[in-house]
Length: 239
Image (tube, rainbow, N blue to C red):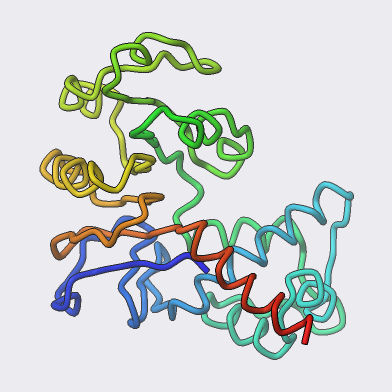
């Protein structure tokens, strides 16, 4: 699963961004309630299931149905939703649209987050072209690279811009979140520059462990690690 890294002194106060992640500790959402990290992860599953229900035209759902579609235990789902102050109506269940909005508000998803992708290789280009981000509140506003042959090319609606101009680009685009899609050797330096320029939420696809200061939220996705875990399970299935 995706992992995250934070410094050892992460018990200090972290600025509210609507979706603050501190490893191993509760998280305060935009409703001001404390959300355990495991609950926050499951809320994303509930949202996915609720979005599918809306697409089907479902107006009501029960904890049992929602839990089944999200792949969790109904009791866990009810406990998670109780943390948001959402208990549903006995005998009726949940109004799909209202519950979707309630969870989205708790996670800070009722606003638009402006995202810059650093690295316009195959992965960066694929991410920038994914249409599902915008509907979930994330707008890709900048795509940056350092290769002269890549800078100036067009990917979807974006023109690849030069990393050398990162300061001006991040400021003018009002970037809230950055995605690092660069080789491991360049990742820490670029991460440092993002932090220096005020970016406090970073998603890294680089195959290295990055260091960030207190108050910066870093999540890491390592596709090779996920494949290695699958290989282990596949091996056991064959025995």
